[in-house]
Image 1 (cartoon, helix red, strand yellow):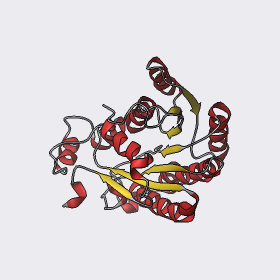
Image 2 (image 1 turned 45 degrees about the vertical axis):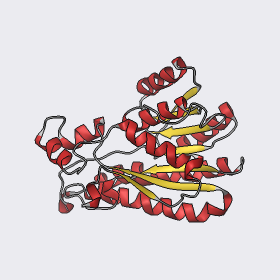
Image 3 (image 1 turned 30 degrees about the horizontal axis):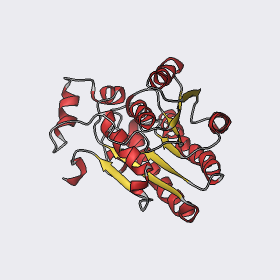
Image 4 (image 1 turned 90 degrees about the horizontal axis):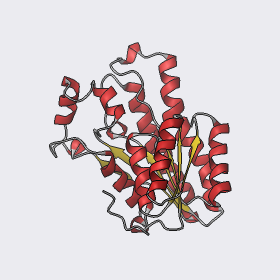
Length: 259
């Protein structure tokens, strides 16, 4: 359940990439519940339009824009359509990402593996910020949250390129935060642990599998997280309650990396 007041993001426009499922879907719905007009971006039209439909049924305003974040033309069009529809951009959650092939050791990784993961997870974040920031500057600033992972601060055998991509997201975000701090744009990172999403199921082999049990056991809190819990962290980072927070990586990982 969204703990933010219905008017927390009233008259604000929020953009969510990777908004068709999992954490992105939950965050798009949470932004709408808190009063924002929401632009949902992703590659899957059916799922994206379902999220928009849910928002509209709840009395909110939303738009789906089919987007491949690795395509600069797509990202540019996404921001242009956001401005055309709602006239401004206040908050962006750059969440689109893929895990790639899991279980490959470093010597087994290929150039194709590298390009597929890095193009979405790193280039995608870079392109989104490149086009979001000018849009935000037009109305005096804004907030950006980029999705990393516990894999952005620790290693993970069998997922070297994914780990590298999530480390890179943190570096990009810290740099952008410093570059635009004086222009009222805050840039932060959310780094989830194991969250019950389709990606987590693919990564672990699904609920009940040995991989799922193993990764779940790494969380001292005693369980994996929910997409709604990460959405709450994102909304906080985008809210005025976090007005003095920029360049920060918020680990929402059930204590995993505190060990």
